Image (cartoon, rainbow, N blue to C red; front, top):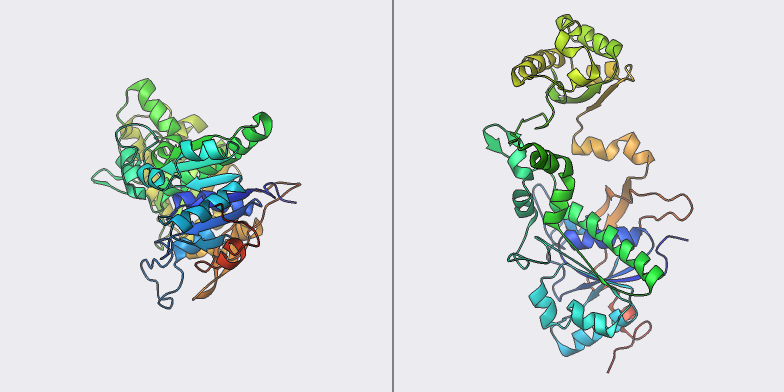
Length: 396
């Protein structure tokens, strides 16, 4: 038994933010029926940099967030296609979409219409900038939400703003939507009503920056980009290059003997007795000036450049009071024992290109665990079964 066994989700969404939310529900046991337009989700055949899989193969983005779903291909703008969607919704528990509001209204798939027809349906929608306001229907891609949410202003070096190396606006928006859906299902179980669940990529960016935004609101501080360091944290916290071109992220040395050992190993014994580094709080920058922080970081940089990343990793693993990690490349992440043993990485077979790895289900439950459900679907593979009369009947 899985936590969402018996729940039927009709997903009508594109790209990442909607599909990734539905993916979580799928891994937790829900049947997810992905309704695609005649040419499919536009991301279905997206290539991206360095992609030498055969032409026409399912693309990595689509494969990552649509594994295990059933694909129904129809034209929702036609009378027959719309009747088919209504037939699906009549048996569904959740309608999940990231289509823009004007398009949904045109297809009679807006919340007001569907809530009247199916009062217990959980109607889950996600967009770029929130359901209200002048930009409620503004088009969005991941970087736009990151820019508007402020994260791009604090990422990068003093002379250059940068985007993060992952589409965290889309994926965090998806996580918020998935959380909203299970909350809506719980509320329906308790109170007997369906309702609309809404969030956005912008809202998710603010959620990710709760500390930083509250710090600015409370103090009036103007945070600045700090490159390899956090804009609020002075002291040693940050990423440091090693002699072989690798890197180590050192977060904290919690005990003095761990700090002394690090300074000795790195050839900077002067920092072991420096009064600016004698407590855990000082090493995290409490009470330090910007000038102090720069001087300390320069010596820590010198220390890390004295050895390879592997040498530092081996040494720091002998220091349990030091919080650190070696910076891993994405190929290394896919092979990381810790991720593999926790089943965070799963295998799938992608139509057109074959076996590969992707991210699996990262939430575990002790008694009713979910599990990855399989491969990304071929476009329209479920049409005969789902629309052929064996499962749903079209309303007249």
